[in-house]
Image 1: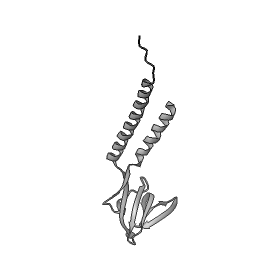
Image 2: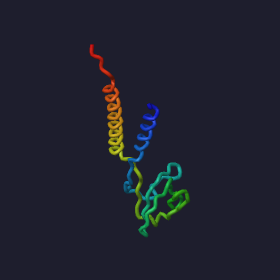
Image 3: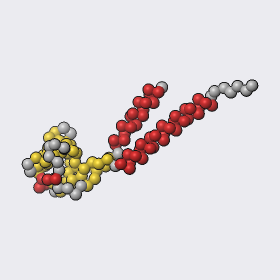
Image 4: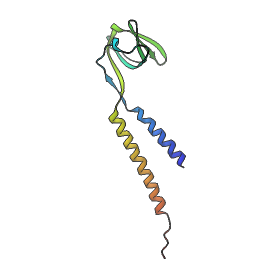
Length: 123
């Protein structure tokens, strides 16, 4: 039973990485990293299209990356705005505290149930 509880806790902790949101960056595409440290960005084009480029980096006059595994390049002069996915520390901490509270409550309930089901011997 303990192994199953441990596995459940690990799965819950993996959800902590889900506390991310897109944040607008006051950065021009030219200020993005080169190929040494690429990251994911959401790009708004001047035509009104929005696309998420994975592992984006600047190469020559284009923002390069991939969409669903397929390579894509967007000319820098066609980019209207950029957003970068950032981890929200407050949401992550709150989720961690919430998960710990639920796990603690479950453990306490199990312990109370075990304690209450023990026979009492009166002498």
